[in-house]
Length: 251
Image (cartoon, rainbow, N blue to C red; front, side, top):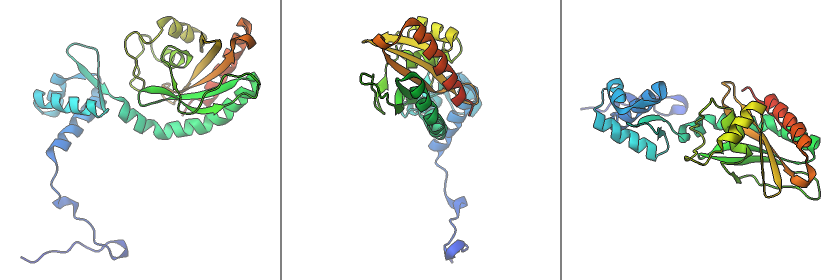
């Protein structure tokens, strides 16, 4: 039989005949499960089976595989239900984060100039809260941090992040094992609009930057040595951090 050549495309190259490529059923099934979770999360295996037409054992194997790859995350429910994992949120949010860093760069430097202290921009990466930008203080004695530093879950960054979520907060972008979060700090941050945490002679004051859907995408944090900030100073800085974060929020 004569072989039919594909039609020529731009620059004389032949177009690929995609219709002749066989679909990989396992990949197709994984996509269907992932899309069903995205539409109905959190969702259990039985419901996923009904939604996709894939038997329950197959759905379970796909969900576990996607979880191991970071695409799905199990809830603490019994039986287990599934929700989107950090991986897809990182990829989907990378462009938003880039815009947030660019939009916040002027804000954190203005905040640094207003407070005289080091200011950080912290965002979710790999399930953790990581420093993505720094405006260093020019003071002789100052608290320092570097881009790439991981922030603790019991500090101001995490408290501000989770305070921006509904009560009994969860965040697929930030993995928080049971007992790692301080509920009192989060509640206080929700009431004030900014979080405060003191340790190792440094007071951290942070407020969440929100995207257009009012979901936290970053946190602005001021680091102040304890000897240089009073209780009234914390309130003043807190108001400044909150206002700066609000200015950077929205898209």
